[in-house]
Structures are given as structure tokens and as C-alpha cells.
Amino acid sequence: MKQLILGLALFSLAGSALAAAKPCEELKAEIDAKLKAKGVAAYSLEVVDKGSAGDKSVVGTCEAGSKEIVYQRG
Image (cartoon, rainbow, N blue to C red; front, side):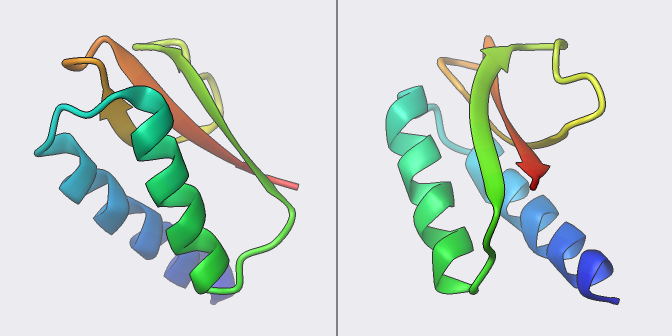
């Protein structure tokens, strides 16, 4: 159940992140702050080229859609 709630929260973050073209580090810092505020621990956020997320969850896009911010737990 926790994972479902976390997944929904991350997708809502991604939806709001898609609407704005922000620098990657700024958006990554905002997502990091939101995750910490929700009490999420032991995760990593990484900026990767679009389409190279692999099995990680995409939680935002930046640099006019050319990069993605991916989330991985643990």
C-alpha cells in the first residue's frame, strides 16, 4: 500500500514537472524537497538522457524535454 501511495505521489510530481521547462538541477532539488517533506527515505534522484531511464521511475523532465529525472528507491 505504501508503494502505491508513493507511486501516485511521484506521478503527480511528474505531471506538474512536465508543464514547466526548468533547469534540471532546480527541478531535481524541488522534487528532492517534496520527497523529504513526505518522509521518504533511502532513495536516489538522477538526471539522465530522455529514454534511458531503464527500470527506474521517471518523476520529471527538464531542459525542454531532452532530459529526465529518475527515482530509484534504496
